Amino acid sequence: MKTWFVRPLVAAGLLILLATVSTAADAKKGDKKKDKESPAEAAVMAQLRAWFKSHASKDGVIGKLEAARAYGYTRPFDAAPGKDDKDDDSENSRPAPGDKRPPFANRPDFQFIDALDKNKDGQISQAEFEVWARDYAERYADYLEAVENAAEAQQKKMQDALKRAQDRIRRFQQSQRGFEGRMNNRRDNDRRDNDRRNPPKKN
Image 1 (tube, rainbow, N blue to C red):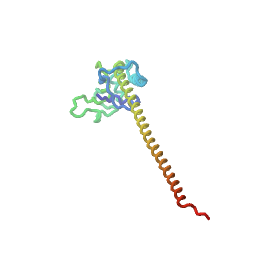
Image 2: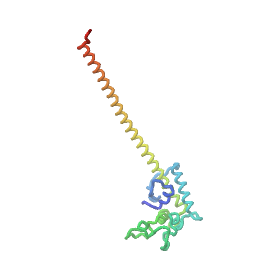
Image 3: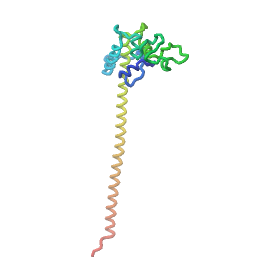
Image 4: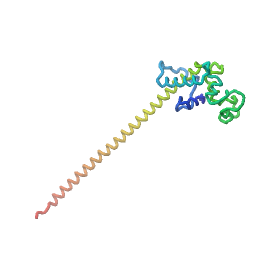
């Protein structure tokens, strides 16, 4: 399942190069967890925890109001209709006609609460956030490793192509030198044959 509630994290520089992310509930069953987190995982976890702390209430949770503010709204997604900082009547903020989901189903703060709130109490605890953050950090670290491997493979491919091109240049240069050498030898032989057939006249 793709979720769009991570966009503010993208804007904050936490989820660079990713526009969507799967929640912990979407993780494949049977995936082996690593005993130690990688430096990339640790860095992402630290940034995600800082994001959570900056938006959590005094009770250490992110409720509907905190989630709304985190995503640029002034009112919770299920508040009575009213003017807000964002245009909730835009096509992108409401489900398509005939969609039976609530009118705020496309709001990222709703998706954030809906995806991470496992006990359905309407708010995200630190523990609930950690479950999602840990899953994301592992996936993001794997993504970074894949990008690095792809770059290394591309570099090796370029190096192999360069070596093949250099070999072709070297073979041509060698054949050229051989051709020039044969031509020089032929001119020398022709000159000697001509001297023998036409010796210079004595005065």
